[in-house]
Image (cartoon, rainbow, N blue to C red; front, side, top):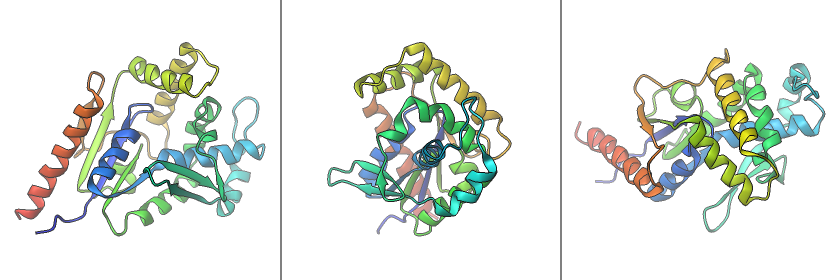
Length: 235
């Protein structure tokens, strides 16, 4: 009997490793993968490039909202499975991962019109199921009926260390203290925003991966998937 296709929602704090684990899980299952954080980063990059974010960080919400119908965010996958974020036809995968975009993405993500615009697209991605999607509100807002929900966490310092190493590997000139401050700031904004704040869904399974290896994470996720499939097929 062929296993039924399901929706897997992976939520959690910034730099918790949720994207890497969600991507690996999708590859293992032959599922589609969607990085919703990349979608918000792409809209943030658009706002930055069009002068919609002031020097003090204030976002021109009215103009950005009006521009949303002209913003296209899609994904392209290489033969090796790596994913690229495409903003209005341009590959912006490297640009959206920079610290400057990280510094503004939570403010842009908090704008209700932006969230509604992208949530609608994200829900369309999951119509056929067989998808792993990660973000901040997948299990609570985008797919509240997802068959498997995971909420990923780790200490702010642990997450900052991971992010700092990533940026160093890309040659980004920054300090650990700057990265830690960015992580803590994003946590606060994500938890306290009025529109779809970051929170664990009541039926989500918690995963603190502070001391786990990547292999341990991946095995744990596969186990959770098989548990859900067993329940569904035994009904």
